[in-house]
Length: 348
Image 1 (cartoon, rainbow, N blue to C red):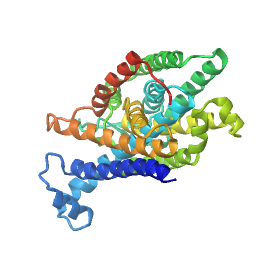
Image 2: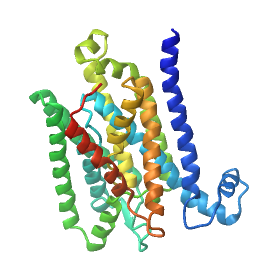
Image 3: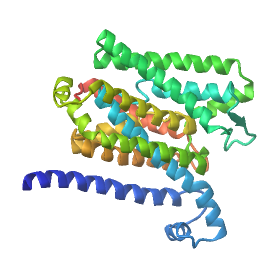
Image 4: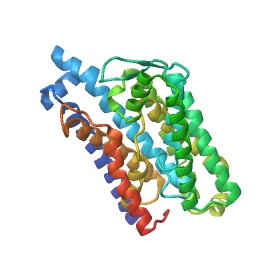
């Protein structure tokens, strides 16, 4: 009993450490920027005792951006964790399975074809989502279509984990081609705006986008935690899970459904942010193990930390120029992806 408590206590301590690190990094991210603010001013402003200038900078610009990074990073990491388990594929994530590309295709179609986006004249925000519901629904439907294709191919043709990743790459190319065709028939200013939007940028998130993402990601992560024991059973093998009374097909489809919703919301509001869903679960799987009681919250906090750190780096590396956060996360995730392919991988 004592050894088990030490075993679980260590994992809980790691999760608490990650949560504390996320809070500290969030305060540093709010403090970072061209406006000269110190941590004391940041804390006082959050407590409602700041100056008029700090109120505008923090409440209207930096805090929505930081919260968007934390929420999107947490959601993408949780989605990648569940995808890897449900597909029995450690390389599965919204970006590697083409789901992010599919969601981007749906968002592009909504912005250009359905008029859900308006073009701005400023470089800071070249495209503004004026109907986030249409964009999210369109992105979600396309993301779900890509997921269903992968699941059907896996079930009907008996795809190996490697083949599922290749199928995701093919689907990603297909939806990217569709995005190019949509942009080809759009106006020049629309093409420029959508290309800028696709880069991935947390700065375009307002309080409305943050609220929608927080609501949907919160529901998604809560559902994942509710199913944590089912995921542990599936991780031991389908036959074992069925013997324990788990409806494997239902749990798998529901998990992929919720994962797609999270990926669709993040992409439709922030653009393509690659590899967070791959990197965070893989790192934490090696630290806390494959028990989803601890793996899901640990990966969620690490995803928030990674995306927040990437965005802070993108804002400060060559300030005042802000780099696309999607490029930073891709630089971080691509080497790990190649490393996993080179050394071989396992799902437990």
